[in-house]
Image (cartoon, rainbow, N blue to C red):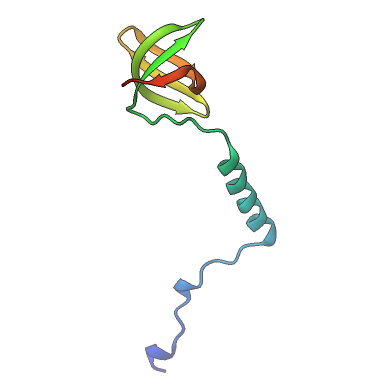
Length: 87
């Protein structure tokens, strides 16, 4: 038997069940519709909040709509709606 006659199974992929395919599609849809922050790590922002006060800094963390801003006075967490980009 010649090696060119043997079918290569590595490109066929692994079979998945209908349930796992639906779960994967549902997870992608939920992730796409989840609210996101428009700010990226490293962006210079100004945060204004009645509890945290007003602070300038850079974005260092993101978790959903919460953004961590590193300032001279420490790390403050803001909702992304309370931030503005610095000019």
